[in-house]
Image (cartoon, rainbow, N blue to C red; front, side, top):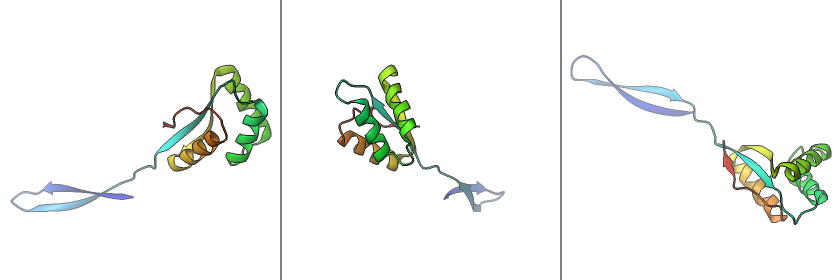
Length: 103
């Protein structure tokens, strides 16, 4: 939580400092894999299972087919810092990645 200071003027010449609570959300981002002619379905599935937490084999295959049919697929969405890590790891395995998209 961040405290924002605002000034409120009262009648007369004195001012009062008031605290207004403001909640800031941590930025989130999407990790998107793009279709290419370099990677096999099996390689994409193996990378997704190895790098994305909780990725099941069935979900990884569904995403690999979506990448092939539609040209891209969101494989993870969440806190920006984690998105950057997964993006870098997938890219280092040779997958073609879209730039990280903030949501």
